[in-house]
Amino acid sequence: MVVNVAAFIASLGGATPAPDLNAPLAGLWWAAKGDWDQAHRIVQDDNGRDAAWVHAYLHRVEGDLGNAGYWYRQAGQPTANGSLQAEWERIAATLLGSKT
Image (cartoon, rainbow, N blue to C red):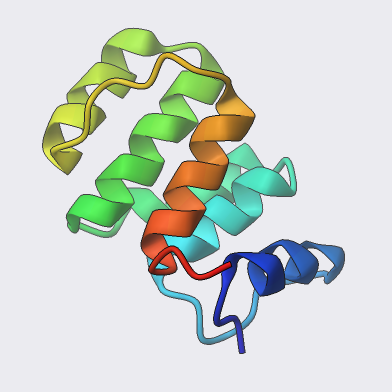
């Protein structure tokens, strides 16, 4: 069971995400593993704001900043302009309730 950021990061050593992860966290997990397509499939089917935030991040990774901007607006989040790693960490911390 993933209960904090450290456990979430540690879970990246596995072959699949923990089964108790919600769609936004599962998408973020697959993004960290380098499987953009799997991450995108997961979040595009979820209508929540957290999934929209991960969706925005994925399009930023892809380099499609126009599409990313749309998803940031859907998520109610400002457009990120820092490093992708910093954004990934901020999303993970927020979605996990900032537990370290």
